[in-house]
Length: 232
Image 1 (cartoon, helix red, strand yellow):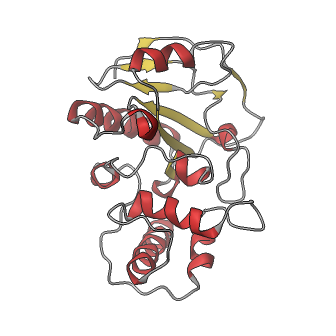
Image 2 (cartoon, rainbow, N blue to C red):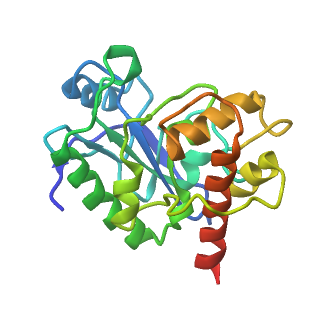
């Protein structure tokens, strides 16, 4: 895949021995793609990502994958608080909920899929660790949001998507969320309903209400079973 170099000074070294095993997807949440790229390259902003994908499919490269970009912020996944240390961050140009959230163009999603496929294959990132910013920081973030086509990515081999809703969850829902990787009290200071909203935003975007229901339980059961299948 071809990249346009747009180097960012906002990075540092990854901790020695830390695996790169998370692909974290964001939306830029700014009025224009140009403004987003400029901010990611601004030393005063102290934020960055490894890549940005514009709406026309153009991919900008900001930080070498071997280095730690600053994109996750205060976050948690599977017991890890320093998500930046073990993740590759991709920003996807979209105004976001603050500036007019809209669907992602086909050309953009094609580029996101192509880039993500390369990253997960190169880094051997498990499907269950292809995440959205809202998954790891549900109290602060909504991106990439309920319009992002997670199912399309999963069909292309990037991430998980529930293929059935007929499974039964044999553990409490909160325990299932924790087993999947979500942070819950007392590990993180986030209301359980907010974590459920993040789960719904990723895996059941048709209704985001922060309430556990039978459909959410079936989706989570299917996801946990898929993890078990892939591990064996």
